[in-house]
Length: 526
Image (cartoon, rainbow, N blue to C red; front, side, top):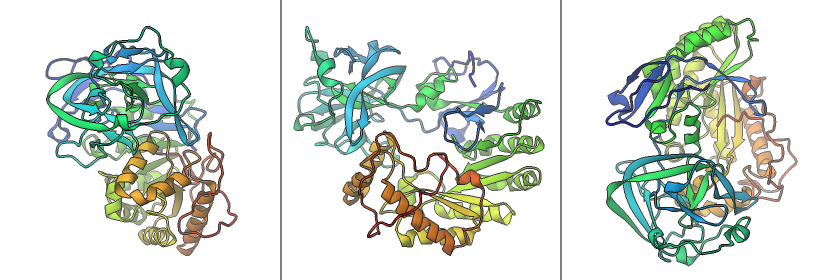
């Protein structure tokens, strides 16, 4: 739904101005720096686009906005490469402009046209990155650039968790500017559009980082969102945030508001109940947890889920919940009652049993023991609990022994079924994961490149091998009974992916490949 006329404007101290439907705006020490705007929602049901491969048609999202507060911003003087080959200062770039971005073409990244869809400003502590060829870039510590080893942040956060960050001698991808942007002068004629678009993205020794300097002050910074998720800043590839654009769908700013202005539909249960009681409602399945986890920390404050559960059950509407959050235990009595009225599907996401590895891969989420206890609590309440063991990480969580250990633990916790799926590396996620892999497990990088050489999906051979291993583990641990298809079906689990080719790839812990059925069907929920 759109929140017409609910734009939050910049102001001194607080961004709390009247919003259409606003009931009150709240700040609390539990969520430092965040403002919750409690609004009277107009609608609660969200229609899933017809082209989606989700096995359901409707969702409910009680909140909008993101508490991760990631900010990717550059100096307004940064030169952005436009599609016509000209360089334009970032301050002058407009929504709708066509710039140069990049896109994967099979195994390779190429320069392509990209459209600017959003622009915002902020003020953050600034850093200067200097390259061997004289290129200088001023950016926030949260900004990411593409290196020969994947996407890296400019600097580590103060007092925060570790993340892949630039270091001296990292090489940035692109062609560089050769100087600081203030010294650059546009040539009278340029053929960049003809020579650059479609060409491969490369790097060189001239793009080695020679210095990363904290300027010791905050500066006005600007960023844009583009259709490719990146753009060329001072001649190197710069990351932007796709998710920020989604906040504009609510008529909110894509910058500071996205980080700190969280819309909470406090009347979502009442509105949902009214929508479900309409004569036109056909009692189609409604999914919760497909966009954001409905049992995040904020749910402990607002307690929206009990009303949502009651509204769905009372209307005779079947529903499903997918979560990693133990807070669901609070609502188990409600779910027990709802299950007497309508089909209720509950699933927990758990794929990594090693707590240390789990915190490396999914920092900030409940550890495996907490999720196993959640599964046990769900089943003790008399409800079936499916488990989405996704994503399985080649050479880290896959092998016969690990897969068997996972299924044994899930069986002991009382899970009703386990759906297993291999890691999916979409563009953007691919670079991030490969950078993490290079830092944490460098010996696996070449193997991953072979398995994922054909595109976002692991090779068919690997997926078939994983399907066989998981199928055998399910049989050994009693997961071969019929189960809720909500967590098993997907329209295209093994269909060709654009740009993907079937080739002989490595299969961990497996010798000769055998003929196998397609990988287990899985919902695209992440």
